[in-house]
Image (tube, rainbow, N blue to C red; front, side, top):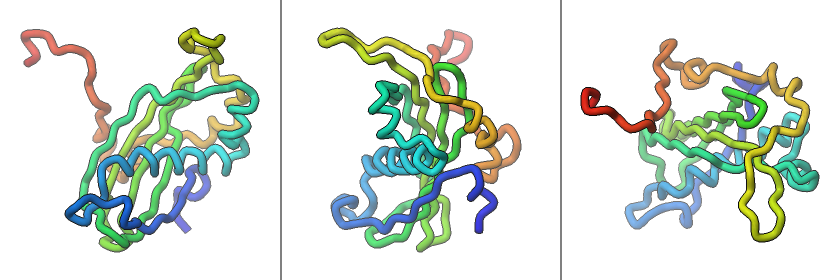
Length: 170
C-alpha cells in the first residue's frame, strides 16, 4: 500500500500496440488520455463522478496541459498512473499526474492540468468562466504538495513560465 492511496487516484495500465509509434515507444498523445482517465478515476473515487458533474450542467474545461517525459515507455510495459489534486479554488483546480513504469522501475511521465469551471452556454454562444458548483470541502483534505507527490526536494517543481520575457530577461 502506497502512502498516496488515501489522497490520490490510481490505475494500472498495460501499453497496447495502438499506443506506440513506429519505433515501439509510447506516442506522446497517450499522456493526455491517461491523465483524463486518472482524473475521472479521482472524481469517481472521491464521490463526484465526472458524469454527474455533466448531468448537472457543471462543466470543467481543460485550460492548461503540461507533460514532461522522463523516460521511455515501450509496448507491453506495465504502468502505474496516479492523479493528485494540488490546488482548488472557486473557479479552477490543478491536478498533477505521475506515470511510473513498473516494468523498468522508473518515473516515466510527470504532468499537470489546470481545469476551469465554465457555464453552459446558450446555443451558438461561447462558454464563459463560471464557478465550481460542487461542495469543495471534502476535496480540501485531499490536497497534496507537488514536490511531495514527485518525491522532489521542496521548491523543486517550477511550473512553466508563460508570460513574455522582457529584454533584460532573455
